[in-house]
Image (cartoon, rainbow, N blue to C red; front, side):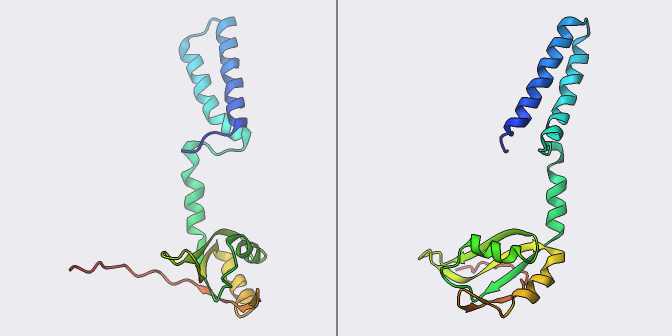
Length: 154
């Protein structure tokens, strides 16, 4: 769970102070104060621009449906995630960049994966496939689904 942003905390505190002042000046039941505080828990993130916890699954589900993965091959070994993100950002919305490394040496293997908005995939492929990047000719195509691994029984 992420910690709340400071603006969300400040807005929630303002609502709590507001509820305290109302409850001390006007004779209202604790139930009304509880309702005010409960409603403020939903309003505070909206006012601060942070999605509420009840709503956090909706945007990620939408994003995951609209995202496709590109395979990027023949990458320069010195290329990093930031450079690849910048390159692909010129052709659409980049969600993530993963450059593969050898698990024993930690050195880059010369290929990786870029997750982009589905409607930007074709534009990125046509713009970047067979183009030169840091003196290497990139190979860009839609990534294939990884086959299920079966463990060998000894």
